[in-house]
Image (cartoon, rainbow, N blue to C red; front, side, top):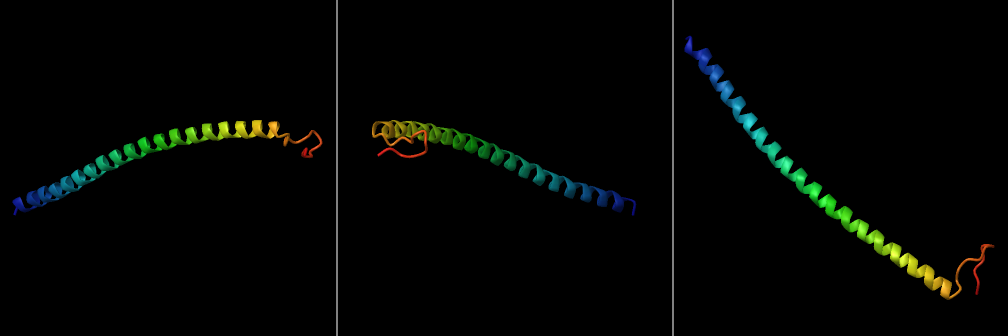
Length: 81
């Protein structure tokens, strides 16, 4: 009868160890997934800054075209024709 509580405690400790091991594995996978998300986010930010640079260049070109065609707003808010 003395062995029963010891065996019960060992069985409980084994179950706890199994669950802790599973939790540890899940955390490892989540850590890897979070790293992947972080890398992808960095790529998205890089691509977005490239889009902004292109839009800035297009905006400059449109401004230049408007000036050449004299479509620029006058100081009074009207448009020359």
